[in-house]
Image (cartoon, rainbow, N blue to C red):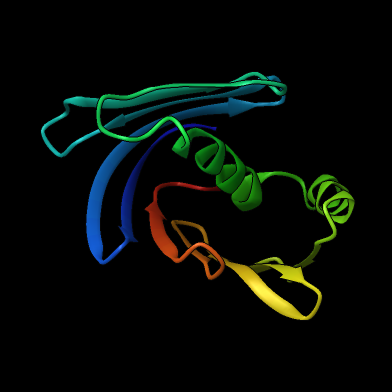
Length: 135
C-alpha cells in the first residue's frame, strides 16, 4: 500500500479528522499524519519488530495502537489469527467483516469495502473510519 487516507476518529467524546499518507509492505510501515491544512501531526514507522513515533500532538503510547489497528485492518488473516491466538484472542473474518473476540465477546469490529474501513474498539472505547483506495 502506498496511498493517501482520510481518517475520521472519535475518542473520549471528541471527534478528529486527519489525513494520512501510508506506505506499507512486507518489510514494515511508514505513516505520516497531517491536519486538514497539511501540517504534520506525527510520523510513525514500524519495522516488523519496533515502532517509532514522533508527534507533538498525540501521546507516544498511541503508536502501538495505531500500528496494531492497521495490522488488524489490512494484514493477512492467517498470520493475524495465529498472533491473536497466542494472546488468548480469536479472529473471525468473512472477507468484509473482521472481529477480534475475547472468548465470545467481540472486542474489535472492522467492516471493510473497497473504499472505506470502519474500525470500532469496544474494549478501549474508540472508533474511526478510513477512506481511501483499498483495492
